[in-house]
Length: 204
Image (cartoon, rainbow, N blue to C red; front, top):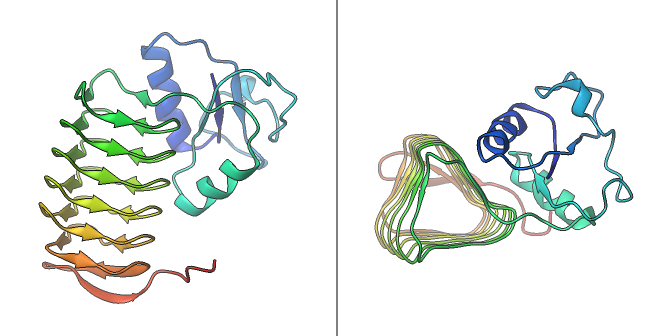
């Protein structure tokens, strides 16, 4: 397996790879460092000719950067990478590139689209739908039958209540509670979470 990114998130994924006893070829990183991973594993900037048939995980927490890198990657994308202390229901469907960190719980009939991060201690309840390129930060909760659109950031400790809907590209502030519905590309925070500003244009 190869990681694309050598920062803090990549370190956690590398440790998961070690715990799962998966082969690890190294990591790409386009920056100069320093890196959280051992320098000896650095394969240089992204190069599609290096280990071209090895599966890759994009180890970048920023949703927009992760989405843009996915457009240029030519390596096959790895199946969901799940830390051994996480629980994933047999009926849940995790798309390629999804990463699930320690202590997360993903319940029955959940669907999570490509390249989404389920961070430490996140709880995703029954029948939840989560779009591509999302990041559910540590200890956040997606309640039963809630929906999270693509490209969303659900910050630390935030709650999407059962049946609530978060539109594409939203940012939900730390500790906030979404009770009903947020329109796409909205920043919202508070209890209950209320729109404060546009997160970014749909044209970006």
